[in-house]
Amino acid sequence: MQTPNNMNDRPNDMYDIIENDDLGLGGKKLTSRLFTGTGKYPSDALIPEITEKSGSQVITVALRRVDFKSSTGNVMDHIPKGIQLLPNTSGARDADEAVRIARLARAVGCGNWIKIEVISDNKYLLPDGYETARACEVLAKEGFVVLPYINADLMVAKSLVDAGAAAIMPLGAPIGTNRGLKAKEMIRILISEINLPIVVDAGLGKPSHACEAMEMGADACLVNTAIASSARPVIMAEAFGEAVRAGRAAYLAGPGARKLEASASSPLTGFLE
Amino acid sequence: MKITVNGEERLVETGVSLGTFLKDNHLDENSVVVEINKEIAVKEDFHTITFKENDSLEILQFVGGG
Image (cartoon, rainbow over all chains, first blue to last red; front, top):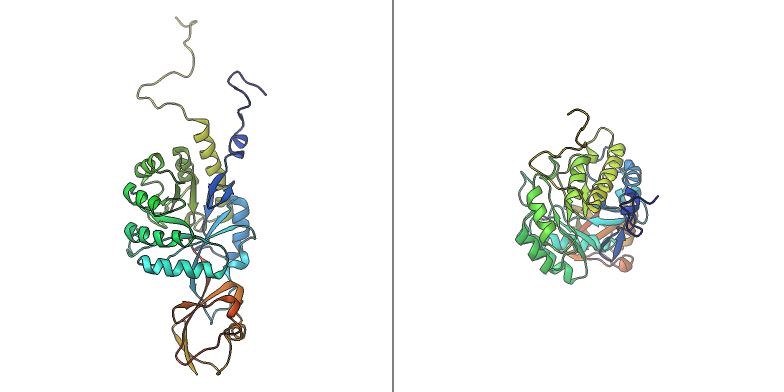
C-alpha cells in the first residue's frame, strides 16, 4: 500500500527492508546476521533446532583432542549441512599456537574460515590484540577467512584491517558473563571508523543486547552462552534471531533524533483554552 | 612399537597404517585431523602412512565451542 512517505518503491515492511540486506563475508552472502556458538549446550542434539529457530548460518566450534574413552558422538553429527563452520583457536595463548590450531582446523576439511581467539588471561578471558594481529597476518596470507576476536580497541582493529582480516569481532562483555554491551561506546567507534563488518561477539546475554548492537550499526552478532545457559535454549535462540532482525531493521529505517527537552506527541488542544 | 597418542603412550603393531589405526579406534577419518611429530598428515595418505618408534601423534576433532 502506498503511503504519503513512500518514495519510489522503498520497502515499507520490516521483513522487506532486511530481505535484500545480505551480509557479504568471506565470499558468501549471509541472509542472517546472527552467528551462534555450540559450546556449553545441555546436549549437542539441540543444535539442529537452535540453528533452525535462530536462523543462524554461521556456527562456531572448537578443536580438541579426541577422547578415546568417551563414546559420545562428534558435534559435527549435529550441525546441519550447508552451514558455514567457524572454528575458533580457543586454547591458543599466543600467535604461534593460534596459527597451529587454524591450520589443523582447516585440515579437518570443513572450510577455511577461522575465528582467532588468543587468550592468556584466565580470569576475564580477554583477548591479546597484539598476538591476534600477528596470527591474522600469517593466516590471511595463507588464504584463511579470518574473523579475529578482540577488545573493542580502534588501534588493534586498524592493525587487523592491515593484516587482512575479513571482519572484526569486538567483545560486548567478557565471555560467558551475559552482561551485555558493556563496551558499547568503544564498539560504536569501531562501527564508525572501521571499513570491515563488525560482529559483536561475547557477553551478549539477552536479545535486547543484540538488538541494541544492531540498532547501533553492528553488522552481526555472535551469541553462545546466552542461548546455552537459558532454561529454554531453542526459544532463546529464536528470540535472538528476531532481536537481530528487529535491530537491523530499526537501523535501516533510521531512528528519530534524541532530545534533551520533551516534544509532545499529541497536537495542542484548542478546546481546553 | 611404542608411540604417543594425545599425550598417552600406546603400543601398536609394526606396519599398521594410520587409516587402520583410526578405524580400529572407531574414528571417522573425515572428521578428524592428525598431526604426526607436529606435521599435519594429509588425509589422502592416511592409508599409506605407517608409524615409527616414538612417533608423537595428536588426533583432534571439532567439539562444541563459542
